[in-house]
Length: 377
Ligand SMILES: *Cc1c(COP(=O)(O)O)cnc(C)c1O
Image (cartoon, rainbow, N blue to C red; front, side):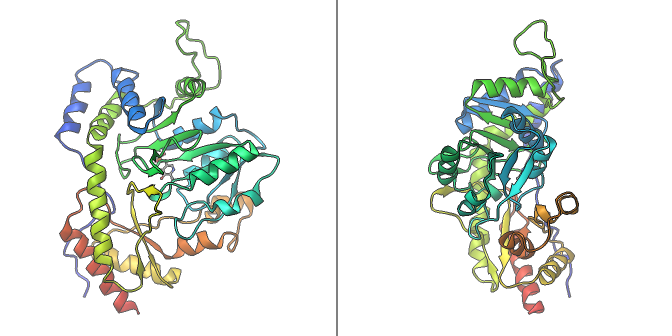
């Protein structure tokens, strides 16, 4: 019965002649790294998000790691964070031998449940690392209030949220330090890449130094004054990012249109809840994650398998971090600790989502979903 009429991938970067031209231009210069495209990309990115400084690095994970280090978080410190995210948002805390202290999520926004944070604060809490999940900013006004009252810092994992806004302010600038990622499935891509954004010149200088082996900055002698890494991003990647950033308004508009089309079509499908958006938020669509109402994990997995067999690629966004084997083994986490996260981890499906997803493809996905759900129920 199920036959493949179309193949619809989960995500697909949109590379145009502009991206190709910018990359080729770099290839005819000698400056393949630490060249002018790096500085230009950082300047344009900082301008776009409205931050004083942007420091581009080779991945979003590197950006998060440097953010943790730049805030002086280390062994024995605790960082409050969400278990419903990509594993990097928690791993970056472990890199510095600090401890991620998980707080469950809000069932509407799927972001960290701010109500539940204060019960988890301790003498050792140094920061809250909140994730703007799927391009929907967290509740930053209330996060700021908690952080100010308890004198702790706010790290914004905005890796999925470039271009999103909370009460008119751009994602990435809502915490004390923000991190972006430019992997090919993100709103804009550099192939691999990421960036830290901050208004603090000292944090910016520290990140620039740590990105490049801990070298002193602006000092001709270039001594290695602190522990650093090679987290550099090449000018080839930055040129790709510059072209993508030039087209970002068009990219985000197109993604908004795709999300609206999904929403309209999903209205006709029983048992599916489309993603919600809070009124104070301007969404920057990263992925399109639906929930199956009342479905068990087994049912959800069967839906995904059957969609895959029709050529429709789906994702598990996200498997709860605390239940990943590494986290279970290292910290003794178990089922039942974060019920909302676990319930969402069992019944969400990421549908194919990218700029150039056509109406015919969306219709094919939604029709496939409707048929699969009907056949299973
Ligand atoms: C993509 C992403 C990152 C970083 O990813 P990289 O693959 O290292 O660029 C971090 N946090 C979240 C929530 C992400 O989605």
